[in-house]
Length: 174
Image (cartoon, rainbow, N blue to C red; front, side, top):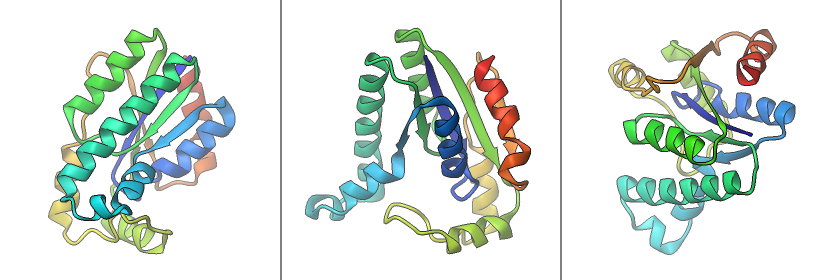
């Protein structure tokens, strides 16, 4: 069994890569933006600040992930990984259920391309529409968290998916 934790700046290609991985592995994708958007679309959720809605939706994400791992499913968690707790929770669930833990970071270090992708995608309520400053972009990329005790794969998502998908699948099969 397998637990894959995706990471990367919004618009870097996490969801696109997660879909391709799911096709190849049969894994179930838990997309943080789906749950958070559903929460924000409720009357109660619409009144919440971003921190509260994010915290609640992450708690729901982790509960679903734990349930799926318990059922023996392969799982992909599609979410930026900006907090140490995210990595710790992912690694601890993988250990608890004795599944392989893999961490894939989508890297697109191009402010203009990120903004182009963000503006041209079909956006959910919980997703940002654009990055307003290069400084905010850089700070977010630099604050991304990675597991220390597990090998990580960083993929350059400025290139076409077909140029790196085999490398990702090979990494997942290690």
